[in-house]
Image (cartoon, rainbow over all chains, first blue to last red; front, top):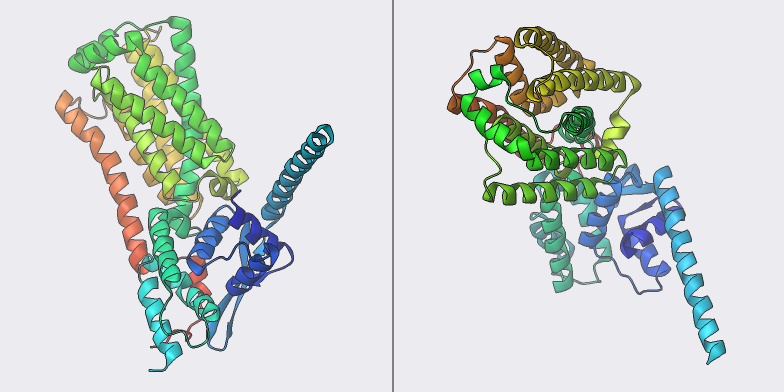
Length: 105
Length: 343
C-alpha cells in the first residue's frame, strides 16, 4: 500500500471526512511531511473506492460548496489494520537490529 | 469578477482536463477543496497545483474503468472479468488432460473433409501443441488470479501470454484458425474487461447464489461440449454423426443458458453480449459440425469468426464513449446536488 493511501485510510479510521478534511488530517498525521494536493487526493480516493476500501457516506453543501464525506469500509478497516501490523513488525525488527548492532559496536 | 470567482474559473479550466463523466461526479467537490486550500488573496492556481491537476487528469483518463466504478456497463465488465476465466477453466483443463492422456492428436476424417486447409495447419501445430498448451495454461492462471481477486496479476498473465503468442506467430506456429481466433478473442475481451472495470473484486460482489448456479450450469455445459469436440480432435471414439447429435444438444444447451443468463438480471443482457462475442467462434464451429450453419470456405470462416469479437470490442469502446458523454446511470449522479455550480 502506498503511503498516501495508507495515510488517507488512517485519516478516515477516526471517522468520516470530506476532501479538505482529509488533506488537513493527513498533513497532521504525517507531521507536515505529506501534503496532498487535490489531484493526488482524488486519484487516490478513486482508486480506494474502486478497491472497495472506502465509500461515500453523504454529501452536503456548505457556503455554496459541495462536500462529499467518505468513510472507511469494513474491507478498508481490515486492510488498514493488516498494513499497520506489517509496518509495525518491520519497524520493530529494524529497531531491534539497530539496538543489537549498537550493543555489539 | 472578484478574486474567488476568478480563481474558481481558472481551476475549472484545469478541471476541464478530466474526463467528462468524472467531472460530473467530482468537479464541484474538487473545486471546493481547491478553493478551501487556496491562500488568502490568491488569484491564480499555483504551478504545483496546476501540475498536480494535469497529472491527476492524465491518470484518470488512463484508468476510465476506475472512474466509472458502479455503473451498469462497468459492472457487466467486472462480472465478465470474473466469469469468463472461470467458465473457461473447465474446458481448458479438460483439453490439457486429454492431451496428457492421448498425446498428440491425429486428424479426424470429418474435420479433414470439411476444413482441409485449417485441418493441415491446425494438426501440424497441435502435434507440438506448444501454443495451444500455452494459451490454455494461461487461461487457468488467469482464472486463479481472478478468484484471488488479483486484477493486476491477471493482466500480467494475459500480457505475457499475448507477447509469447506474437513471438510464436513470428516463428510460424500461429495461424488464424478457429482456436487461435477463440483464444485471441478470450484474452482480448478479458483484458478489456479487466482494464475497463473495477475487476473481479467487484464481479465477486455481484455474483449471487442464483447467478452462481447458472454459471456452474454454463461451465458444465461448455466443459462437456468442449471435451466432446476435443475428443473428436484427439481421435476419440465418437463417430461424426454421433458427435453431431451430441453437439446439437450441447448447442441447444448453450442457447438455453444464454437466454437464462439474459433474463437473470439487469446485468444479464450485457454479460450475454460479451459472452456471445467470446464464444461465437466455438458456437459457429459447433453449428458447422451439426449442419445448422453451412460450412464456409476458410476465408469466409475467418471473416465470420472475427466479426463478433470485433463488434463486441467496438461495443465496449462505444459504450465507454457514450457513457463519457451522458453518464446516465452512475449511482453518484443521482445524488449530485444541483445548484452548486454557477450557471
